[in-house]
Image (cartoon, rainbow over all chains, first blue to last red):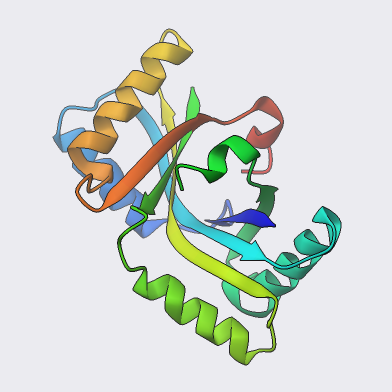
Length: 87
Length: 87
């Protein structure tokens, strides 16, 4: 079962990398940029009997290793069938 | 207009970071893990008249700076209304 985890810095936390990218884009002429934040994408294929069990397992991985829950928020999403092929 | 960009290594490219995370998770007892790949998430708020124009602008940012199209694939997605609040 394929799931993806999106990990972002919590709203109050300064995103230094995002600020640097935003400056670089402004320097390239992207004046229409209002905000930019950089996060992590983790795509996971896990053996599980049901989508619920897979999600629970990935949630456990996030809490134990993938996300730093002091600084970061994470969301878990199912990867839809049509997205599997191009991966 | 808020969009998100998901950047992943192309399928043939070795994902060293993903392999390291996968090993670490296996060491923590996650034997049900089949595959794991690490990518980047970039959330962008851009000034644009239409969703199409916003997407085109973000695509331009990807090609000019955000993605290394030799090694990486990217997809652009709209961030749905209900996802804006917790960001």
